[in-house]
Image (cartoon, rainbow, N blue to C red; front, side, top):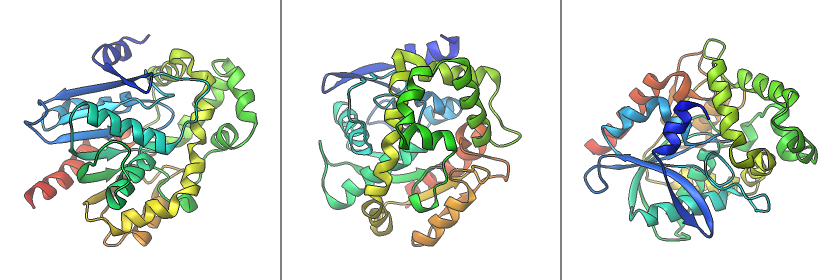
Length: 304
């Protein structure tokens, strides 16, 4: 395993979620001595997505960052009904395990959908474990409104067609890797594309613990975005939780067009557009800018 990934994994812990091991990192200032920040990663990687902004966040927060089931260093059961609701349950269970009752949230990609579900539980009172209070929510690029989401062809094939099961048998091969690398290049900005080492790290994260067998199954969470769209959007429109969207406009999936939709749907929408060349992973492509706009949002909330 890549040395940087090994250090990330070695610094983490595991907790039992209904018989499955869930990896998480908790670091920074002790719980109770600083605001808690929950980081919710995207698909198909893991909490390592936050590595570029991690150290700065530790100066201000107690930072909690789990790997969702089926991804990263968590268990990847092959016979499992992965869903946004279950991912939300895992986050609830972890926060209950750590005795956390209030937090800020920073979410990306699939993490946006999980954050939307958690916000809906906050608004409508249907928690699986125990109630949580959200001090603020910051969204990064993600498919918050399915009507504006435009996934790449390989994403559609893997998550929405029976061909996903076929591709699962060849994942890890050279052909699949080339297709995946090309797709990742499309999602990053032209001038911020991933280095060969970062691509290798991405593949190691996906392949860990036989992840190739379940990546396409985990990706079927996109159907939840259709089924629960109105509930999630209602929660976002009615909430008093301060929200901010920080968007990389060059993202072909959920870039400038998703930000426009957010501004159309969310009352008094707080939207920050990053530089034109930033794509789907702003926390990797423009970490300083993400930190600037995220911390400004939190500071405004804390100032009351």
